[in-house]
Image (cartoon, rainbow over all chains, first blue to last red; front, side, top):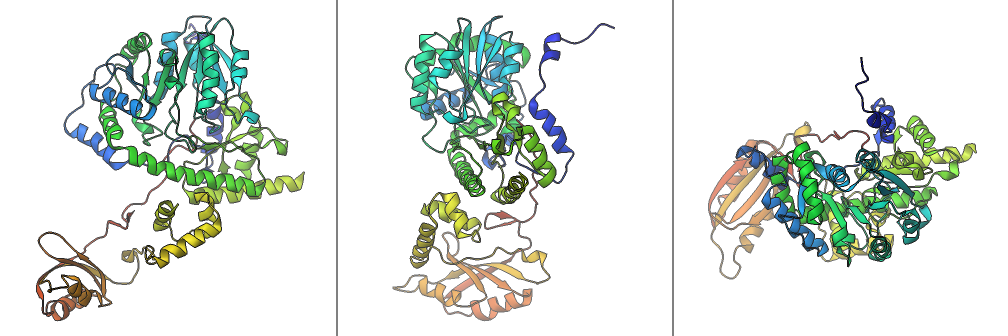
Length: 389
Length: 160
């Protein structure tokens, strides 16, 4: 028989997180610090709208781009939060999670041979999506000494004549790093000078613990060269609803909708109705969850400090990214040994790119009780490591 | 910090001071001072434990009693409320808008104990016009905590 598979797909590296997942899932009683989703349930009033939509028999397709009301609310929200105005009928598409927006955004923009700059450590989808879109991913290794922010100089060095798009994944998974206004202004200058586009993945925009999140699209000259991606998963604890969106210049969104209509048709209708409620009446829920995350963030940083584990202070998302280089092990070795010895699962930094080597991603989408127990075990584990060295 | 501190200890009053200081991002001495101040100001009125008595062998009956009373000149409902809340078996007393005046929450060992309180003590008070007693059959949720279902973390162990 002929080989049924696509060479390009077969050549894709499987997600680094998968390997670790398989090890962890065999250990039933392990404490996990490994999830990339909120521990909160979706606020009840949002779930209730979803239920109501089902009861009312709203089980049809919506328009390809998404419910009119939802697109309008998305525009209101972005205007309220970032001061950017988008036309709901021309510049917005509702997608199946932020993930779909990344995929169709890259497919809509890339020609064979075009380069996409992907700062890492970062979310696992950018590189494979770029490859599947026919583009060439160019990995830019972010540095711990810059608190994993992207600097203008690093960007300048990564740009070639073929560079077309920069992925901007902040607030960042897995490092928790943010880009503040001054950081964005510095890179915006480079972006405009080299005439490249930005795909700004702002899925964690609500979860910042310093100044409020600034979108690069709000800077002068950037709106017309930015695809802004966001969604409901992290802010409203709606991961399973699979709902996100992209906003940007009409020319790009129009092509994204074309792919979306053929591949997906439309995002789930129930989720869209629930999301309208989230945007209309969900601000207080977001604030409450954010206060909890911030408390846990402080708790972990203090715990690291007490056990002498080095970690820069991350101001975004719900991850901390401590450095484990002092133990002379790779991230993977450390994560496996920690899991073996103390039954706590933290994801090796290398699951998010080679530059994650020497770091662990610890998620604080867990109750304080869970984190407290996990930190006791981590303290014990590294004390033993230090003793044996 | 006051509001955030209250929100935390309202859910968990047993968290130790050092940890409170850490998660709120302040010094321990500030937490101590703030707690003391709020105790003095009567903002913090106690540190109670939420007990699901249904799970113990201890039999308890709780009743909500709607009470209609005649307000007193110069004192409104306050003096009537006081006559009622002085009884130790009365857990809570609220002044209520609507069809009746006071909502009294009463706890007793048996149904008989509660009903005798209502008939002997409450109804016989001079200004009580009428009472209506509702016994609680099952507590689903109390003080923001759901009693009837266990919450388990059903998320995958590792997700990107």
